Amino acid sequence: MIIHAARLSIANLFAAETRKVFWKVLGLTLLALVALWFALRSTFVTFVLPWLQSFMPPVPDWTNWLTFLLAVLAGLGLTLLLALLISPITAVIAGLFLDEVAEVVEKRDYPADAPGKALPFAAAMRSSLRFLGVVVVGNVIALLLLFIPGINLIAFFLVNGYLLGREFFEFAAMRFRSPDEARRFRIKYGFTVFLSGLVIAAFLAIPIVNLLTPLFAAGMMVHLHKLLSQKEARRI
Image (tube, rainbow, N blue to C red; front, side, top):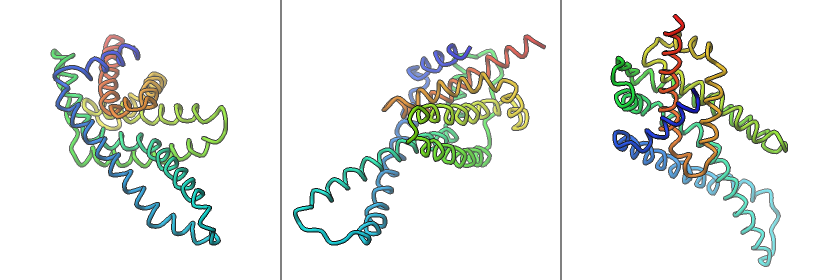
């Protein structure tokens, strides 16, 4: 079921019906990452670097290579920080585009089913911002574990698998259920949702490709919710 949902979502990425939202998601994600990069770099150069230099004694000119080395290390640190922030950025973008992605998936793959109901904009943004905070905290924990060999990658997948799986699934479920019903439905199939979240986390770990994480994750969870709902209906 999970592999089937992931395969359908990948197919949707390249479907003609998805092309419009594809470019919007990709463009907005790139724009957000570029803006965040310049904001982080400006903050470092304007505030952090002068503060660090205030603790350093004067050095001879021949040690300018040391300043260059520190600049390179700072650049690598900012890149790592930006990579860790991709996950919360995808959460915010997903809140803006999930309903549009869901509508495309539902019309394309489930034309006989009743369409879902889009979340009100205010409710979608509240949910996205709430999840943004949760993901930031989760990734800070993963960052702290980054320096423990053998645990860092496991922490990345476990944290992002749980958080991304939970939020994207509840987004998809709330098109057909109340928030409380969506949460209970997610808890009922919690292990399946978590495993699906691990697939999303694996997608997120692929450089460049991970810019499409919101589109992939939203489509996958729409399919998963549909498949689980059909399973539930057969059981009843």
